[in-house]
Length: 83
Image 1 (cartoon, one colour):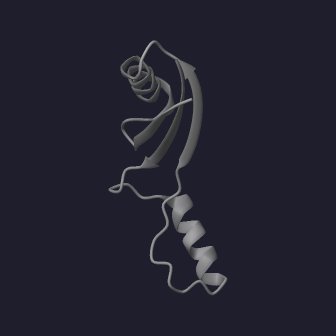
Image 2: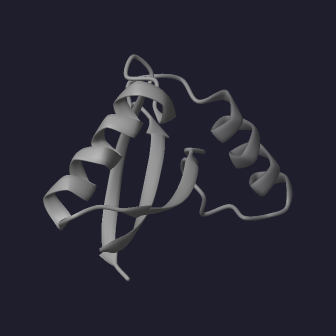
């Protein structure tokens, strides 16, 4: 079976996000005064093959834990779509 994983990786809410602060400051300078906070993360799309959805989920979990996300500073979530 073929799957697509749409993965979002974001810094933990407890940590300072300097890139998000810079974007928020830029938006305020452009008169987007309603913006209260900005967090900047990453979005990763992966196509993979697996025998079933359970195996595909495990593959994506392993990829996130071992390579894609830094568990100390980031959290992740993903959606798995059968193609």
